[in-house]
Image (cartoon, rainbow, N blue to C red):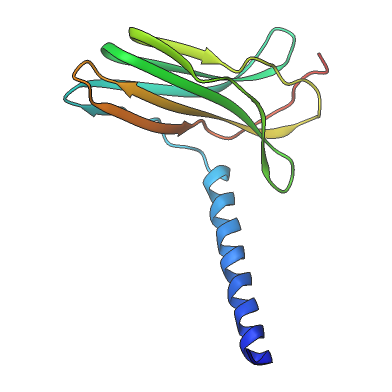
Length: 153
């Protein structure tokens, strides 16, 4: 490989990296639109991932799911993410939590995050639903990104 070819490849890779970082940053800096319902013949469900603050001032991630009828299985995993100035990092996450034959379900991260000063946060919910007809729906939903300051707790 010639030196000019090598330099050209490095420039292309740099541009690709900048484009990927910019796209990732844009995905998390805007206000997220309202969570659309996911609906098919087997049933309609709406999820609402959010950040909550406990009475002690800790921040937790949470999600609530509401369906128009009982689903055979709803399995959820919720995680709370924090921006450290250069990248998003998971602060706490639940285990996969299955429930059977329900139309509503809520789940929080098991640990509240304290201290660390003001930061940007979002909650991600991974959702697996088995409808009564046996059809399966998998999705990942993110909350809006918000600026919060957890207390020292």
